[in-house]
Image (tube, rainbow, N blue to C red; front, side, top):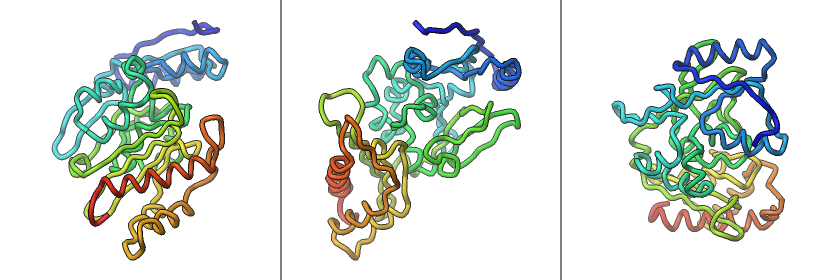
Length: 278
C-alpha cells in the first residue's frame, strides 16, 4: 500500500495523455505518467515518490508497438521486459534486459519505465545507446524523433510533460555480433555490480556500461582507446579505464576499486568473445 491517495486516469490517445498532464499540473496535482507502476510503488513506500494524479499510458496503441517497419524495429515504451524477452526481436536487448530483477518483476517493468527510471541502473538503455537508436517523444509541443545519444545524458532528458513513446533501431545493429555480461558481488538476483553490453561493427567494438557510475553511459573516448589495435589489449583496456566518467560508485554493492577490477576483467571477456580483429 502507498501512504498517499491519488486520482487515476487512463487516456486512450497520446494527445489526451499530454493534455491531461498539462491540466493536472496546472491544478498542482504533480501528475505522473504510469505504465508498469513498479517504481512508483517501490519509491512511494519509502517517501521518495509522490503524486496526486496517475496517468496510465500502457494501453495507448503507439506505446504498445512491437514490429519491424522497413529496416527498423519499433518497440513501444509500455512493452514489458518479459514480452520483449519472449519475442526476442532484438537479441542484445533480450540478453541485457532478461536479468533485470526477477521474472515476476520483469512482467511488470516496462521498457520505458526502466529507461526513465530514477533507480540509476537503467540497463535496458544500453543496447539502444550502442545502436544509435532513435526515440519518439511526445509532449506539449507535439511529437519529435531524436537520436537517443543526443537526448540521453546520464538520463533521458525529457521536458516537463513529455513522455517516451517508442524506440526505433536499424536492423544492421540488431544483426551485429554482441555480448552482454552482468556481474554481481553475490547471489543470482538483485542489483548488479556491473553490466556491460557490447556489439561489433566491422572491426570495432562499441561498449555501454551500467552500475559503474550513478548513471549508464556509452563513451566514444573509451571506445577509441579499446579499438586502438596498435596496442596490446591489456594496454588498450588500461587506457580506456582512464577515460571513464566520474564518479565511480563506492557503496555496499562494491568499492570503486573493486568495480574497476571487475570492469577490467569484463572488458577482457568482451574482446575474447567478439573474436579476432577486435
